[in-house]
Image 1 (cartoon, rainbow, N blue to C red):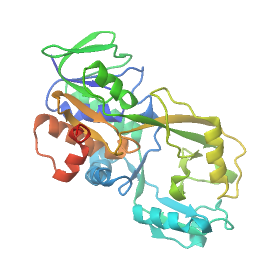
Image 2 (cartoon, rainbow, N blue to C red; image 1 turned 30 degrees about the vertical axis):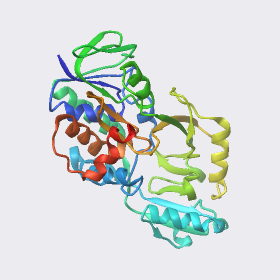
Image 3 (cartoon, rainbow, N blue to C red; image 1 turned 180 degrees about the vertical axis):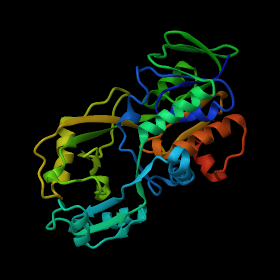
Image 4 (cartoon, one colour; image 1 turned 120 degrees about the horizontal axis):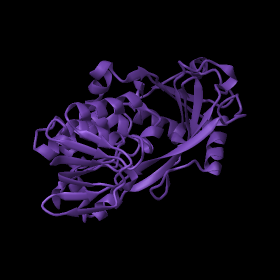
Length: 357
């Protein structure tokens, strides 16, 4: 008998599965033929402890030690450089405060990223506490923990029906029976809930596009920080010797295999080009991912109040990787009745009960 059947093979499902595999037999099923196919495989892969609403920041803080130290660590220093025009001072000051950044002389910003336009960049601030996350290795290590603890991972297993008898019975090409059902299906979590006879949480998938460019001006970009426009109107960062730029859009779309919108991408690249001296002459490839949110913009973790054997690991938005160690541990703690190291206010802000009032 399966103790925990997990639907979804992205970072939410893999991390929850790794934690729960210490408490019983885990089987994880993924609709696609590879793990991390959708949002998890299309992440900007950054850790910034101050990024997100208060409950997310609390998860970031608890996750930091795991990401820094476990299995040799998953973090590499990157840093974030925020840049703005002269007329963007109010927004610049807001972003600087939100991310606990230090104001930087513009000439120093230009020295760090020499393609910045001195005629446009009037404000700059730096955070040195931002890191790249080795997302692939993190996912694979969580998968390894599941298997090491006797669990199973099944791909190409798209759920077509769910019913509750004495246990959960899930048809996904083959029939799985489990005592507990963990809904980690990303943009599809509400569809899974409705199949299971559980009220949806109001998930809204939002598209975010990305373009990969050649390194601008032939520069070695490997030690450049990630660049942010004021109000997160765009961002850019090094990626395996290339340069990726996102318009940072958050356009609501139905659950889908997302793809970049050409017009949105062009508008975002134009906002980025306004602040640099190197024009975008070639886009090597582009893609999009879905960042899924509930109404209050934070995660939904733990057993549903109407049926504690239906467990949520949902609403990760853009915070899935950086919160995954703490979020998955909270899922396990709330499911097994263990004491969490998170404070009660944070836990209340993350539990699904808040959405049932």
